Length: 221
Image 1: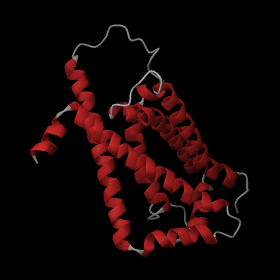
Image 2: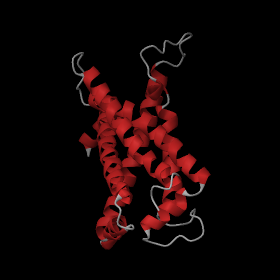
Image 3: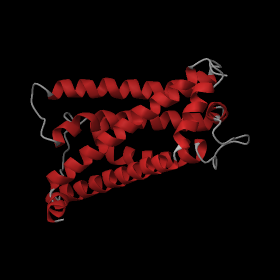
């Protein structure tokens, strides 16, 4: 308990926890994308519907994953807020002139994109999981049809695309800064990590965005 408190009270400990929870969420984002891309399999939705039923087949495993993800999200957000507060308290008087040359747009908007993504997740669950925000015709576990129905609403698809772009910027900065948080910071490796994070963020964002675009274009029916 004392060790846990010391880790929590230190800025280094919070950075480590933020990196660890970020890694968990990054893994979920990739796994969720791979599951969703099954909508492109030309089998009338059999594969992605089976995937949805598989996730719901074990309530114990499903709720363990949900609770683990929820705790990761909450801990990630709390660590971000705590670290931001510590940085502000260390310098209560802001800089008169800011130099953004070494700070990317993604880095400057992390505290904005994070809460917006959290709100989007709540809407997204109601849109495709519980059906509370879905159009009329939603059927539980009919993943293929529900995705086509949901993304058929233009403003819902637009909100989804904007959210995925925010996710991409968040993943880009969080991806390489995660390595800095655990001590991997070297002039030789940091540029490589930044490029790798940029490629990963672009591929993930493009993968998610491809789904509503394909439905709009009539490629998935």
